[in-house]
Amino acid sequence: MRLFRALFLYFVCCSCYLATTLSVVAQETYDLEALFTHASTQLPQLRMARLEEKIQLTEQQVALAGWWPRVGVEADYFRFFQQPVAIFPDFNNPESGQFQEVETGVPFNSTVNAFLEQPLLNNRLIQAKQQQSAVENAQRAQLETLLANQQKEIARAFYLALEAQEEILLRQEDLTRQKRQLRDAEALVRAGLRDRTDIKRAEIALLQTEAALFEAEQQEKAAKDLLISRVGLDPEQKFTLQADPPNTLLEPELAAERFNWRDRPEYRFYQASLEQQRVNLAFAKRQFLPEISAFLNYNLLFQTPNGPELFNQAFPNSLTGFRFSLPLFTGNERNLRIRQARFAADQQNEALRQLELDS
Image 1: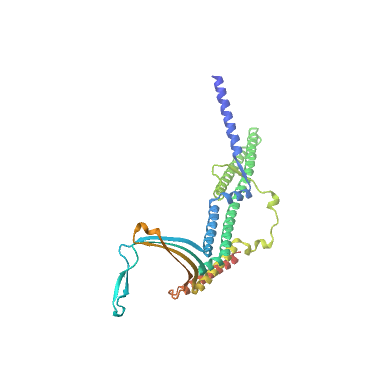
Image 2: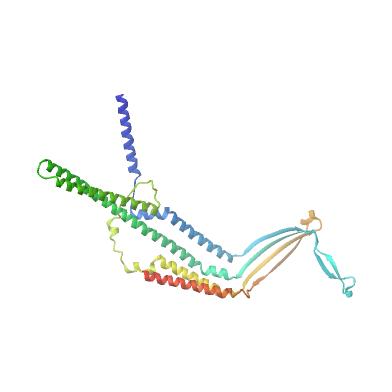
């Protein structure tokens, strides 16, 4: 029985030691730069922003792909149950002024059309080309703005948690000192050198220190919870924080140009957006332009009065030419589009002015 108890106690002690060791090993330590790196790769919001950037850039490439020639094949098959009718003069007696109805074509028909079309002048394709760099700059600046805002939130939570950690260490030292003072006061009272007032005073100081320690622990927990949500850490993963080396915290990077508001990503985003609105305004003003494209078609016509013999003989034809489309009246849409684009450009200008005032 004693041997069994001894083995049981040994097993419990080993288990506790192993659990403590694993928890210590599993605990991570992060500095501010490590938190920035983790957030930039693991935070869903930033990953979504990068995917949105890729979507917009791909959409821009799709728009620019319209300048490439279009090559394709079209085919159809159809059967007439009632033949088309054409009206011709009476060829037997042309001077009579009489006409006759003649069925044309054959019941079974099929066509295969191979075509090539190249845009030569297209207002929307011009717009896509002009706004390419503006779209890229706007998406890049938007991602930088989001990343900067996230880093600001992470830094705020990091230093709050770090301050709470230091506060906990100080309060723990105070707690040790207050307990020692309480023991000393009790010893002096027992020796008859002091009255119980010193004990009460030491107990009150001890309670105040314990309350301050509890408050610091709660502040640390709240700050770490905020870090978990801002960085995307595993809530079940224990971690500690450490400050950056002093030489990195005290670097005198306080040059005036670093705080120039024109270097901020928000300014670059508004500038790119303003450029996009200017391109849209130019697009609205060019609405009078026609659309011109060149095309080349090669057609194979199959027709027969007997269905099984449809593809025995082909009647080819080919043609090339230009296609021209000119809008003449669009219900004042062009002028309204120009007005709308000007309003949007003015809005971006006001956003730039507000950014300058806020800086």
